[in-house]
Image (cartoon, rainbow, N blue to C red; front, side, top):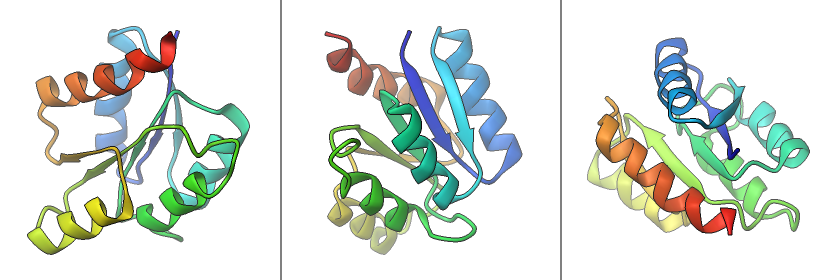
Length: 124
């Protein structure tokens, strides 16, 4: 079973992502802050990280850099999951090196397709 780390401070968005993933057979672990997310990524080494950008404490881009900067977690795909969809935000997120970008509100079909596309190669 694939493990997905969801780093999201909005409870409704967290619940939606968690429920959709669990129905599809994924195991989930959750964090509400960037710092907690980085810690869980190091401890659990998930198959995928879904990262909100606007987080309390360090933001999602900084948390992403910390995950990528550690040898134990640098290969884990990380998806930006954010309501920050202005062209400036999107280019900053793309420039940071995220594996994919998903806007909120979540498009369930696109969300699941992106998760499957990034998790499946890691199962082999």
